[in-house]
Image (tube, rainbow, N blue to C red; front, top):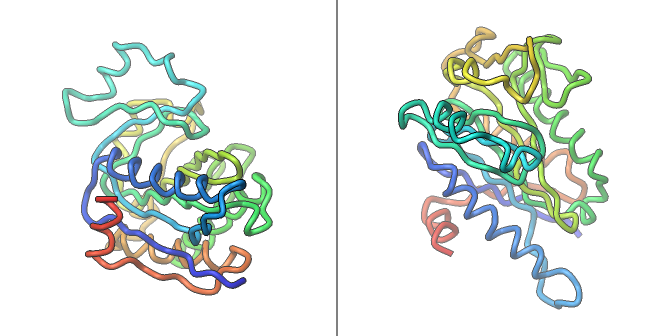
Amino acid sequence: MAQVLRHIHLPGIVPYSTAARLQESLVSRFLTSKPPSNAPAPPPHIITAQFAPVYTCGRREIGTVSPEQQEHLRANGRADFVEAMRGGQTTFHGPGQLVAYPIIDLRTHKLTPRDYVCLLEKSLIATCAKYGIKAMTTEHTGVWTSPDDKIAAIGVHMRRNITSHGIGLNVGTDLWWFDRIVACGLEGKRTTSFEKQGVVGKSVEEVGTEYVNQIAGRLLAVEDVDSAGQEEVSRYLQA
């Protein structure tokens, strides 16, 4: 059966917690539709946003980041620190970075977990290509413009084949924030962005729309994208 991908874009700069609450609400809807329930399954969703400055660590690091390091990351109140259930290690999200969280049922789209990560990577590479940036995968997770320059991070979570979390693609991000950590635990690597690659003047919202279209084009049984209007986004956030 053909489906429509529901795109929920959170306008402006939002706290990490706003997207996290919305994401958990959508995941719960998917999980409650699983057997033995007879509830109808929701359509695939994708949340896009840009966050207020926040460092997040992956589930393997939960409980291991010292209070002193957390205080350092908060940069005298300029950023938050959050423990997340995604894969991967400590990274930064902030203004100028596209965050995209697909919430889908892998079985509906006949994807294995590895297939799904490949789909995210290929969609990132195609999005970069749309703006004249040649990107690639390497032996390390994420998408890169060279073996040493990372433009997008990937960190996902799966529960009963329902996906959450996703990607962070640097469009106009202030890369200083990444200098304060060993990004994703990779010594000697750098972080780059659209702007550092010479592509300026592109908004996170514009790049996000392109990325959502790239995802939709690669998801089996998805025939279109339906973008939630402002009033509908408000209802999602209040649910």
